[in-house]
Amino acid sequence: MNNLERKGQSPFYPGQPVPVELFVGRKQEIARLIRAASQVAGGKPQAVFITGEYGIGKSSLARFVRVLAEEDPGLLGFHVMLGEADSLRDAAVRTVQTVLQSAAARPGPAESIRNFLAKYVGEQSLFGLKIHLDRLKRDAADISRGYLPFLRELYERVAGDYRGLMLILDEINGMAGKGTFARFLKNLMDENALSDEPLPLFLILCGTPQRHREIIERHKPADRVFEIAHIEIMSNEEVQEFFHKAFDRAGLRIDEDALAVLTTYSGGLPKLMHLVGDAAFWIADGAVTKDTAVRAVLAAAEDVGRKFVEQQVYRAIRSQAYRSILRKLARHEFDLSFRKRDLEKGLTQDERRKLNNFLQRMKRLGVLVPGEERGQYVFRDRLTRLYMRMEAMRERRG
Image (cartoon, rainbow, N blue to C red; front, side, top):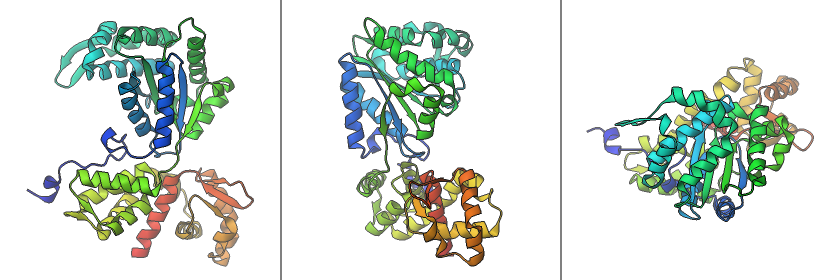
């Protein structure tokens, strides 16, 4: 048996919501969302938009709160991924699919929900529940127009066991820029609030600040629907707790200097925490040492760059002078923002002449945005900044 076969399953989940048992931190955000869930259980509908930069852990937080809220105060939750949805009909199809697939894993409400949606249910197989998509797609327009009645009847089927519904709409990139979606959200909450007996509904959306702005731009009144729960990067203490818990689960010891490297280069961003952690897991032989951690960071840098940054930045910048400025920018010690005058100090005369054009190019590529002060620039997302930092580390090692 080789080393990879002995290791078993990695405790890290790059690109996926983290399992509940590995979730750490976010205590204030969790408390706030559970308070809202309690309001719903008491009969007062709530809507929250969980927002934060890409890779910050919005989906994992929503999933964790859904599990907690099902236990107490007792809301039946469904996490609907709208990644391929391009219309309200698509959203309706994904909702019904999610309800049926989720119900199949819950013995309590499963039979009632299957009876409610029986026309779309096929036979049970080894690979799960078969859904008659052709029938569902034919009815999708009616379901989307009657979304609240659909949710109300769904709840009536399970009201004896639950005190309300939690509906999480995630991966909304394809929907956020559509005025129909913004009006749909506003009408859903308004229609429910004005009904004689409001459905105890907790509606949660997950998206970046850009997606939230798009919804508001398409329909300004939608701004009044949602409370905003903005998610920040995790603290060093939370990151270290995460790595300890994950490596303990895998039966691996992590040295303190290795922990410092992984903490620094993951930058408090859950997506990167899982990437560098997963790389370290497969490299480690009995323990996670500093050398293991450094090698893991370099491997993760390559993975991040290939998936997220190469197409956006590096392939778009052909000029050798621009690439040199980019390398020097990466080596600067700052978080997300920097001042032009500070960057200029380390540039050659030729690079200083081209700096303004470089900064304008980076703005057009969507990498940088102007800061609050004159001459200040801010990276739009942390993944790009951390990738550059990792690449600088790779260069220093030769």
